[in-house]
Image (tube, rainbow, N blue to C red; front, side, top):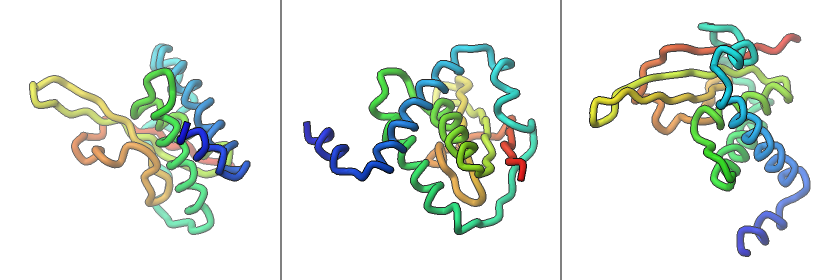
Length: 148
């Protein structure tokens, strides 16, 4: 009940951002069930990156999108881990005409098993997945450039 009260205390803009994040997490989770070759065209240019330049105008939007995706991923009825969060955040940034790059990395866990991770960057800021990205070797990346 406390979390509901907290949610209701937010302004309408924040509530709508949370709702958008929740819906796009569901959409991204659905995409994860499809063969990867089917979703590749929607990710952007393969093995390209977007600019690392700082755009202070977008800084608040990037923070808000990051917070919304990371918070709402804890309340979905489905698995919303790194790939789902990165795709949802990418779509939210695309809607706001902000470029981003999604990275895919691999590593070995403590038992020697291959593990994977995905994270999203826009400018110099990491939107999702930054907490463990340094443990992974980038094996692929996609730049979602915005046509001006």
